[in-house]
Length: 359
Image 1: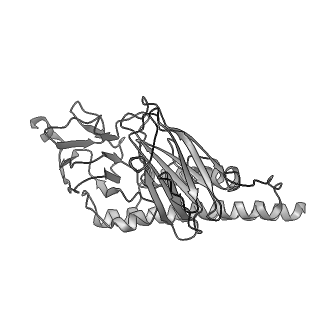
Image 2: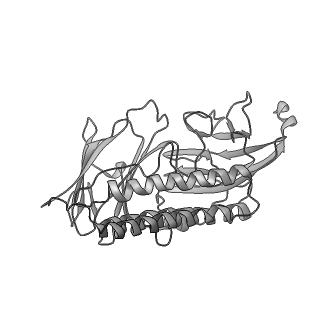
Image 3: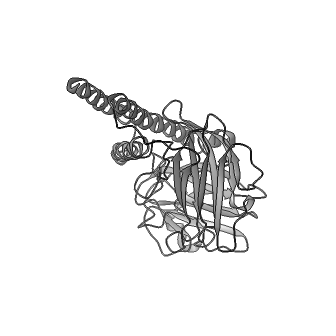
């Protein structure tokens, strides 16, 4: 048995080594892009091990963060707190909690296939505007068979995950939502970890790392080719097939400009529930919003009569709505409109930095 366990472990370590090929095989990347690429794989591994080992039991579900301040996936939103739970479409569950001071709260049932084909198919969506919530913010949501309750999501058999998106315009100062999930009906004591389960979780963990990295690498290559220094609408069905919220317009782009240049983004703001704009690195990780101005929303931006102008530079300057790339010359970017009545396409221009004084 000891030899078999060692074989499983060695196989996992060998597969982890080959994951590095995703980075090393890329040509024409800067040293920064490649270095951050290897860090990205380590971050994905942390998330994957948490998902597959610590929160994998759908009979005893629990919420975890599959994207957060120091481990990020697919243009994660700096204004969001993401909660994920692994569930079984053949069972029933209850989520109970309080909305706190959240400004947008949504629940999405998913078939998580990142480790297979990079997709996360939506199987049902509900947000707080469609729910009954009491006067102090408490709610209960049932996932399962048909119900007459407004706070209900039918649970298709293919469901293996629920994603909760909490969105704030001042995330670090607002009171966060709180919630727990439990399985309804009989609950058995889970069996002890065995060799087969260990192998299953190790295989799924490395497959998630490779599948996720390859998925968003393909995205950013497309954005670099077709969305450079622009924020077009893009194929919304494609973005939502990877786990996006159907109430959100996602305008993905790719920026690239020199140290003597800056990027100016102009757009009207539609009537919407929420919007934000963010900068990312080559691997579609949001930049370090803990320490630097890398994103804006309706509360943090200065808006002139429903018109927004964003000035993106490599380093900070004293001008309103200035975001910085932290010194990198390239990366991805994203504008979101949530619940918008229209989807304006921003005007994006690269200009010389020495002309900025006249603006």
